Length: 122
Image 1 (tube, helix red, strand yellow):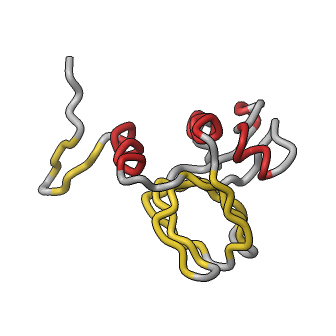
Image 2 (cartoon, rainbow, N blue to C red):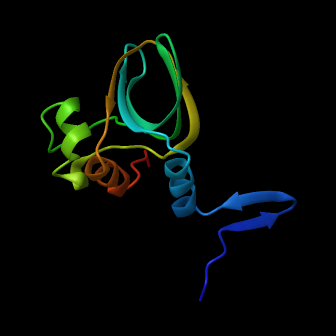
């Protein structure tokens, strides 16, 4: 059975999350891992950059990771222990100020980051 890519509820269109990621990739956006001075680390597609601020789409905050010794290793290899990581829900778009590091991530790292289950407070 084919799954619809978009459904409409009360005049609002909703797109399946697995198709949204491919849209960002198709637009040629780089998947990056960033560090900011005030809001920590994030991973997502780099929509724009202006001096020390970036706009990311389909972004996850990297609150805690296990199985990578540094942000650089995480961006290159992903995490080795995804069950121990704490990555909250993905946000559609975020502007992050005070960015001091931008690392283009590999496809392996992107898949690893996206495979981590959403962490939330209960």
